[in-house]
Length: 348
Ligand code: GTQ
Ligand code: FE2
Image (cartoon, rainbow, N blue to C red):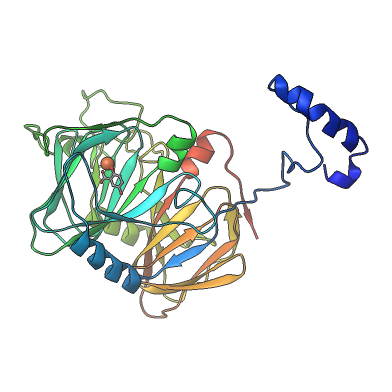
């Protein structure tokens, strides 16, 4: 209720001090309303350019150390509208690791994932499973799994990290533990989850697993590319052209319970229709060039750029090339909204 329609404004103000003594209050004339008609996010759309990020990564690589105790060297993508997080639920950061370095083992209640942007020769161990990570691979570190990274290659490696830290923090559910050993021991079958469930179509019949996050810790780029080239034979989605979610092969649901991940291809000259939905997103441009209009503002992106999309913002994608496709990796918090019954979308 706006101030001018509160005919009892005076009575409300008179009550305020007494009520406060007992830990209660009534709505005051200058209070913001409890509800808005539709979502109003403080988060703003934002565009990070590849060349700027590359220069800044080199800079932090030269000046910041990577010490024991589970430290990481990252550039966090901040949002001008938010006090914390890239979006209301997650932090997206770019991790920079130099040849010979170890990002030592730790675990946290926050769920995390990595999408490899550049370089080769590093591996990640997740709860005893070891995966070599190459460009385009997606690696999951579900809540409370031990993880550490080592770079055995010859050039710096760069990857996107996404953690649902702003969500976990707002729920006051943060836990963290650093290991005393820099790296974990590797299990006898070092990539067991991938061997069991990685096909997505057939699985070991006697292996009982259900519930929780995806049992598969690594989704390789070659699998994602195969899936995309298969899906391009389908009719394009009017809003997203070709958009494939990384799924938990046991449930068909999202790979992680709180962070959604998807790979998207826009055909040459594709011009998608505008729509909006609840949930926030960050896009990483894997290849190609295009334009995304967010609430009337044009963002012209190309390979290596990042783009942040606030909840309920109208957006439409376009591929600016008439010859090559454009590919975007997308991270969102749609699984959270869906599991709470808060997901809505509409054409604009
Ligand atoms: O690689 O384990 O960007 O724990 C932030 C926190 C990366 C990681 C981040 C982390 C990690
Ligand atoms: Fe971590």
